[in-house]
Length: 242
Image (cartoon, rainbow, N blue to C red; front, top):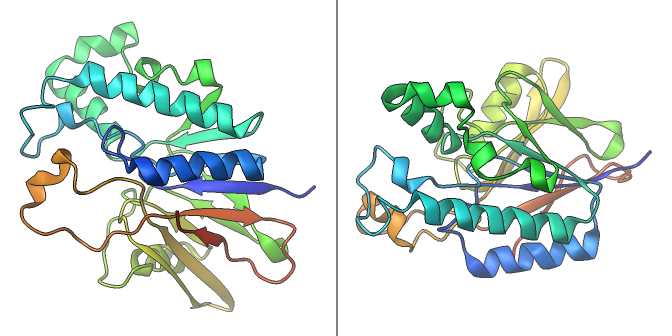
């Protein structure tokens, strides 16, 4: 059985690129994938950030959640009956850390980020990739393990480098978000070839939530990926630029 999987990197709703998200929805409607996987940081949760906050958004968690629910509903509508998985990123973990540090009793009554986003209503499966492995079938009979990217520490100056370092460490193909960079590196690990993909992002770093970075913006890249298990030529994903 063949499978088409669309892998979507960090969106940072409500500070997403409207153009990139519009093109993504058009793409999903056209391709009608079997599976959609969010790499995490779908939400920014700026109101819960320990970084310097923009005053306009520091008390606007309700606005962020409303934007997130609308975004997920649009993804479901564009994806039809596809299986949708949502990997928890470090920005979703902002909610967990905030609750654990300030209002731990809320955990006892089920106040969780994914319930606030109503993911069950959209039939979306939430996954903590540090506890449960997520795999996607690629071309040439291979498969790739999917993370957010913060689960295993490290960094390099080359796009794709962090993902490739993880691939070498684990001895398998990997695909991550987190770095907001777009790159694919491949090489030999032991007696086999592995690759690592950093999948870009779909945020808009000119929005106010990114002001904490100061003047100038890094060279982050808008993109998402398609894996087609029927591809007999290559195990690599097709990287789509909006």
